[in-house]
Image 1 (cartoon, rainbow, N blue to C red):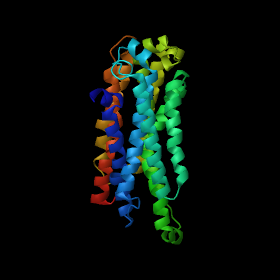
Image 2 (image 1 turned 90 degrees about the horizontal axis):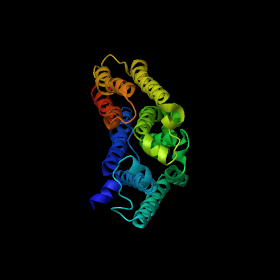
Image 3 (image 1 turned 45 degrees about the vertical axis):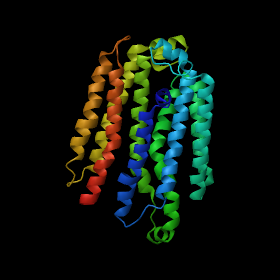
Image 4 (image 1 turned 30 degrees about the horizontal axis):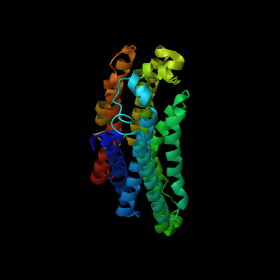
Length: 319
């Protein structure tokens, strides 16, 4: 059983589920409550949506390992598919999980009256499959697609929540000439951060995996433009993300009653990113650089966890 849990990256699946729950109950719900509006997607249906997301992610991890065994051997990663779990079993498991995900997503899409939303999961599953088989071998394409998939995780919550909200409060929206786009902006900010954080993490992994990528002829960032310019690209992206975080605080969150956000952003997001800049600058091929990946993950999780601060501010100060 332990091998199967490793195969589907159980800790990552838990983070995915928690991210979606945090978006719903610590961002969307308190923001709506300011105007006396309640969530309309039932708790059970939302749990089914989260399960669909988690199952699709698990299927993605399996198929990636299925096609990545050669590179993992060169990069000295633990190889599970083909050694601890038969390849045929892994492929069948991937197909079962993907099918279950599609079924659950289809159910929730039907419940909110937008059956076509199931194609979001259909496209996501296709992207994960073709990423593993071909897209990741192309320069930048695979990295950008994976960053988009990760950014979609929090955004799925608001996409599936707005239709039942719009139906329930249609008369109010018409009378006040308003809409629920502000929810898209709030959750979109987290997706924006997730996208660039995931993209940076992908490029950092490319630095670690140079040897294996050469062996499988993958056109990763350092393989195509070289180690030096790859470091420049990563550092520029990290600095851009740091400035963006500061800009979001200064432009939108700089409220008189909010004394938490600048310290939170500074110590838990920007500082780790700046430390990462130094680590990337000092990196040379062959270095044990996996600690930098965990540092990037910490910054990403800190960004998502800012939702707890938002919830506190809203419930205590109606910020």
